[in-house]
Amino acid sequence: MNRPWLQLVLQVLLVVVALPLVLAVALVTLPLVLLEQIGDYLILRLHCRRRACWSYLVVSPRSNWNNVIENNLAPALPEGVGLVWKRRHDRAPTPIRPWRVLIWAAAGQAKPCLVRVTWRRLHVVSLHASLRPLKGAARDPATQAQLRAVLEQVLRERC
Image (cartoon, rainbow, N blue to C red; front, side, top):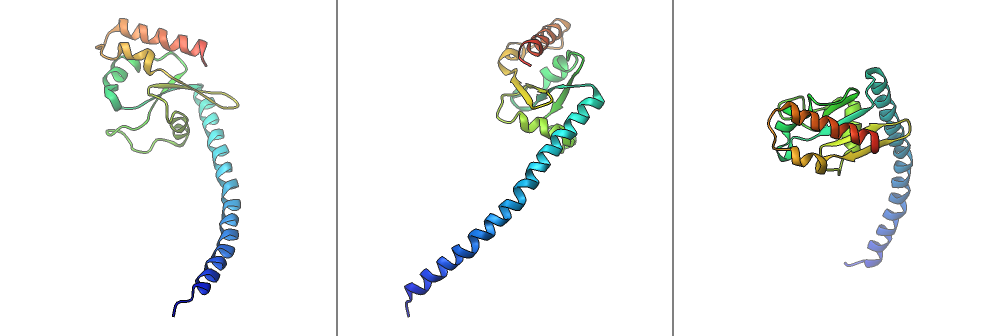
């Protein structure tokens, strides 16, 4: 026997029961997610205060940036700028919690990028285009000086 009216009643009943249930779950979980985001940001600020480091260079091992970062960029970082790897296969796979906030802030930006932590928000500036001409350079003090100058200029102007 085919009863289309019974199927219609069951579908309406399912919507009437499921919709309030989904809304209730959303109303309970959204404030928890918001509190977690606020907590993560406060943990990041505490981490920055303890280390006296409010700017971080977020880098990724993609596109052959490894050699440039390890040989020239890491030694040339100005004082007060930290280095955060998005993911390294030879390092611990899960970064510490404050660094995950920085990595998520830099999502969608071409790496390497500079993330500046302020009291209200995170400022993200992509350095990919300005560092690309120096990408193929070997370990060289002159290249390190150029990189340091570029980083200090970006910190002064954009952050």
